[in-house]
Amino acid sequence: MLEVIKETTEFIKNKLPGEPETGIILGTGLGGLAEEIRVEQELPYKDIPNFPVSTVEGHDGKLIYGTLGGKQVIAMKGRFHYYEGYSMQQIIFPVRVLKFLGIRYLFLSNASGGVNPDFEVGDLMIITDHINLLPNPLIGEHVPEFGPRFPDMGKTYSDQLIHMAEAIAGENRFIVKKGVYTATTGPTYETPAEYNYFRTIGSDAVGMSTVPETIAAHQMGIPCFAISIITDLGVPGRIEKITHESVQEVAGQAEKKMTLIMKTMIERL
Image (cartoon, rainbow, N blue to C red; front, side):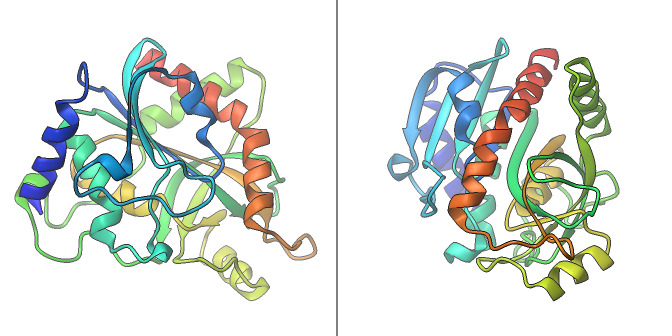
């Protein structure tokens, strides 16, 4: 695995004009942030050796390098999910590559269902912690170059970055929520009983991504910041039928605030 990661890293490095400082992973319907990047290079996933390929609508499947907020960034416009049939090692493979490319921070976004009754559709939720109901991506052979075999998960999401995001939201006079994100396999959306279960175990939002990438990044010592756009509610009395298209629509409407937060954070790093 290490040799494969190095091969892919070397291929990408030879295509880039510089070294990225920040990695960004964009979720369903949240590709708008990529439009803010002054693009210097685009690499379709299908052209990158050993890279998986996005199969989900709303995930373009491109690696974008350029400048955002005056800093060099590399963004994944489209991520990979367990429900697509990928192994956990394939899902976190790009994060390993981003680390070897030199990133010092990782920003992640997703669309998720809110189970906190205080949430509304379109809210932004900064992830402060997670519950992982997916297979752990660190299961398998341990590679010392990736970090400790048993990483401590007490502070998975950077307090510094969370405080910075809250300050930026306050400066721009809009509200952000904070909470615990639970990752499930998908691809089904949740039943009412499952929504109730997730709330009971301490969840504020539920989705199908983000946690594997965060675990891998945390193991490698990369400070992480993650934010969810609440695209539907799993709250008793407020549950409505949802589709992938409706999730993309709500995410697209709310992402301007997310883009502002992330862009300003990157400027200030």
